[in-house]
Amino acid sequence: MSIKMHSKSSWPLSFFFRGKIGAYPLKEILGDDSIHERTLQDRLAALVLNEKFKNWMFVFGTVIGYKHDKLQSYVVYNISLVQKGGSLTVQEARKGFVSVIKVWKSGIDFLKQPNLGGLADNKVHHSLVPITVLTEQGDGDILKIDDDGVFDQSGFRFGLEICLDHANQVLKNLPIEKRANMHIQLVPAGGMSLQSQSVCVKAGGVLFLCDGLSSDSGSYGAHSEAIQLVQGNQNKITKIATAKLFKDWKIELAKLFSVSHDYEPRLSIYSVVAI
Image 1: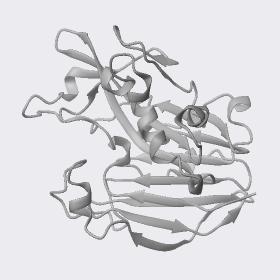
Image 2: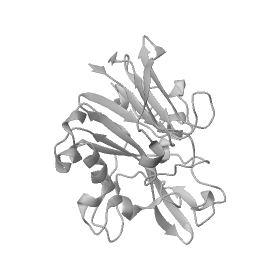
Image 3: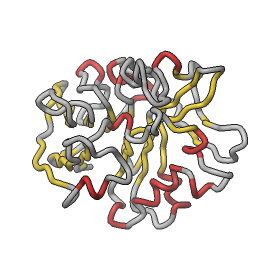
């Protein structure tokens, strides 16, 4: 089997959707008024229904949701949304959807002293209980969570860990039977580089990291990295091209994101490798 790898990056992919106060109310992620088609999951699936995407798998960065825990305290959920493309209907696309939750909260995930009502770092925490389903009182919709970040898609076994989870070896610390024969390890990140000690793919497998906080030179921006495990060596996969995505990206994206910076989105294309 062979795979062609692409990355699209500009903003921190660990926080691609995070809301104006640092997170969205969980109900906005799950859906509104129990109408399933309004869920974020279905909206994202609808973007890639075209048959031309049948050989694509999309990792839509992460989305941050929150619930009130107690007075002036919140539990937050950092969730990576994965969708297989090419389905003809949203109903069919749901079969190719996976969501993975971040385990470790980083000290840079939230501002220490936010202005304008933002969520402060000392007021939020991750759930200490393993989560398999996210629910919200009064909302009939749910979001199923993959329990370990390992899932099968299109004949490949994937493992996904978010940012700091990669440095803390969340996938590598799984029981061997859960992570055995992993073809592809994915790391959406906002402030993380590839950690060689955290690689846990099988021989011939690949690891792909896309980070939206630092550029290849180490300054603010975005970068991606890809390696293949060959005879115990972590060989870099060649980036063969980069391309602009928009004629005028600030006009195109102004309704979705802040465009007050100069970090233009780009598409990076890597060499085809056999797995």
